[in-house]
Image (cartoon, rainbow, N blue to C red; front, side):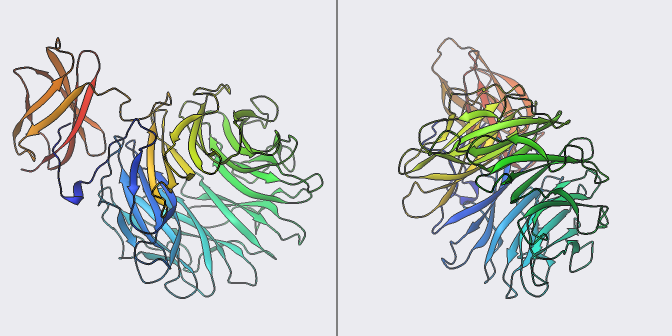
Length: 547
């Protein structure tokens, strides 16, 4: 790619680094940035959404940034304001819109009690709906803890906790690509049974509807797990107020849900059955008609001694799901374990799970994404005494550890890095985002990429080619490329041009006397040029086309 150093803040970029103590800053504005949500941009990059207190230490706004597959932030430096009204906006949830953009929903106190609002940004970060968002639901008392998924048609389905009655119930709404409510304005009742229903999660049914799961205290004793299926019109397809997933003794909480790949869903939760002393991990599969597929009250994922909590789940994209959790079986400190569960409800790996890390001190806050080939990539925060780092591990479909024993570093900068989240890069690797206290004053947001081999940095190559430049830049028709190569015997190079999202556009040959870049076929915008020598060493820079 071509490079010239711009002072203009709209070109404030930071390429992926191979130094895990540096990483890529997403937002380092004043005051705290935290509570982020991620969605893939479908081109190997990510949309990152977060709570931001830069404008007022007493309240949060919602900001967003897009980072491409090369590690460059594509929108305004420090992020685009999604909602910056005078009230408090918290708990952003994010999904891709299926057309290169992103939809964001959040809890908003602009009307006094909390309501739910949403906004859509296109691939360039331009708001597509009303400034500061459109209402998903506005009604008396509080609506909170929103979660959204794509509806497959440019819109989204949202689910939330609703206090319209004396207790918390579960409601849902669909908004179309224009930001217009598609179901009843107050939302569709998913469950309004007695007592509290909380902590909803949802996954697409593949037909414009959603499977929704939550923890439910209608028994007036302990929380159980229930689920419901809404079709694309918002009509509940199962028993009113949901079907029982698990109502065993003691508490079942923290449900998570993924597609089973055959039109149904797999649900996992932490389970206190057996005396209420500690939690284990259980799972259940349910088909599109609401029929339980595994043993009543769930299949055992892990029933080891002591507690297993803080679970996360991903589809393995082939024949089941992979579940990870923090685990205290080994003594005073938590470790991270994982298990694969097949479509028939049997576990695929060793009894009670594979150890992902059993390092000294505590590992917690696991997050998981699929690797696209039947395995998964897991990240967590790792105690190093008085502070935390971020580490990660890849596990294949057979339960084999693929990266360094006890994990590969994602970030080991100064002070603490916490609460990591990750999504697939679409090529067997992962993009990571976390809350970072390296400046010692407040929380910022940083990112990092690891490829399928656990190697950090862009293209994961040593840059032996230096001083890569192009003149003029911006380019209107053609420009001269200049660079230096430590290998003095190289006589030819390959140039590859990428668009702003990191997608390859074309490649061409370069020589010592043939170093021209022609942009006649390119439209205006941001591009990257990568130069590779015959030893596969490379360098990368950016250029702008302006005709």
